[in-house]
Picture 1: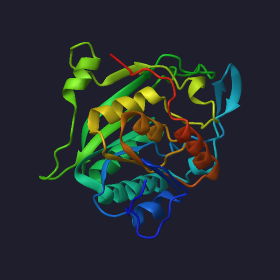
Picture 2 (picture 1 turned 90 degrees about the vertical axis):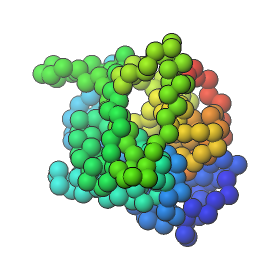
Picture 3 (picture 1 turned 90 degrees about the horizontal axis):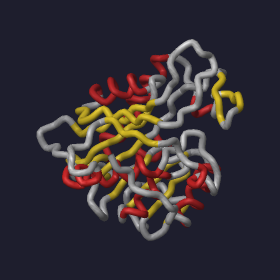
Picture 4 (picture 1 turned 60 degrees about the vertical axis):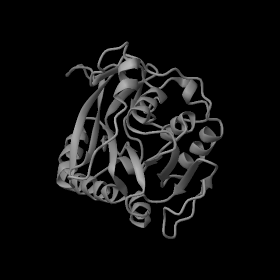
Length: 268
């Protein structure tokens, strides 16, 4: 994809509809042209790498992922969220929208930061997982949900796009609710490698169909394995992904090159 969205940053990979940038997200966003993006999906660090224990494949595993998932304190975490959201506000079109996924470890800071940086929250989506890992400590309820916030700029020019009729059609002719139920990312979507917080394709396909038109430009500033990019390719949207981990960018390239993964659109 030939683009002029960045002042000096060159893509690490590009094809006819996608571009990947190996870069710190802050640095890349600072170089991006203002108001050039139609939609943003962000899955920022949840900052839950605290030396705890979880369950994966029936085995006890550490929750620690990498240094990118660690933070000093709550003030540092909130400053991080305000900074990247301010940069996203600069590059998002006035009638665009932003989606952000998170858990209790980060989503409350994200919600406050959205309002502080001039956004208005449209919806609070609850993604209910049908097969969450069990709670090994047995001292609280099993964590089985994530929150996805959908927001637009809070000004008189903003009018976000919503494909209401398609969402209603996918929901059997009834208005779609803000609780979405489905499985964790299946192994069939990890055949080119694994990312610790990889989202399932059905979530991104619904988000993209709901809030963009064909041919529009979608940005993922913490792209990881580029589930966002795969969904964009399948649905005829353009895609820019940014990540500072070479392994994840290379995983993204493999997935984008083989983007006809066999998934079914999420209904209901």
